Image (cartoon, rainbow, N blue to C red; front, side, top):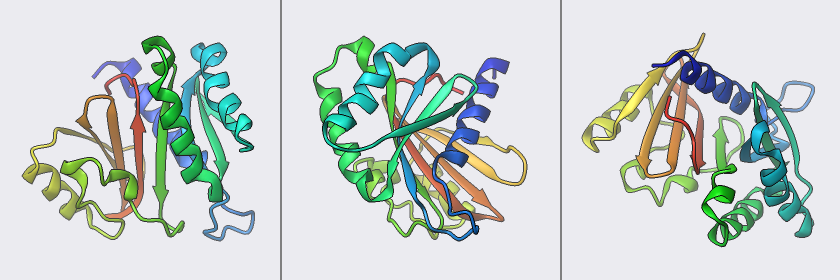
Amino acid sequence: MKTSHKFFIFALLLSLNFTSSASGNNTNIIQTVAVAEITFDNNDTALPLTVGVLKKHSIVAGGGGLSGWMTISVPANQGKQAHKILQDELAGLSQKQRDSFQIVWDWQKGNGRALDFLKDIPSLRRVTPNMSERDFVGILKRQKVDYKKLTPDAWTSYWTKPAPREHVFVTFKDSQCIRVARISGYMAKP
């Protein structure tokens, strides 16, 4: 794996780790959810297509980033609506515009949501928030899904590409699932 790809994946995982913020007293209340990722190189194109479009629909989106990437987040109660708006927006864009940002779905332990965003990916339909790492790897092997195991620090993440332009990261700590993220759109292979 190229060093630049390793750095990209590490930066992406790190940014996904900070996209949803818990309240200051360290409870598990999720205040915002990630809905898109853009590169700093694509700001001129991607910001109007993400933040600008969401603003037109009265959704306030914010962003923050690391290592050339920015994560666009919205209030948790508007995440589903924001995803639909961004998906509808993608349908009418040119290839260059579509490649300027990725739509992100993000589940993490404590937010109480299900993994509905994986239901349209047949090979990952059986992934659940309460599954063990062993069970997850078993699904990947049975479904013959290619994957890479990434192990930064105290957790283990798996990267899969179950369909064209679809990337899924599943993260485990102590063999328990703590985060699942789906990224739809162009992304360099790790």
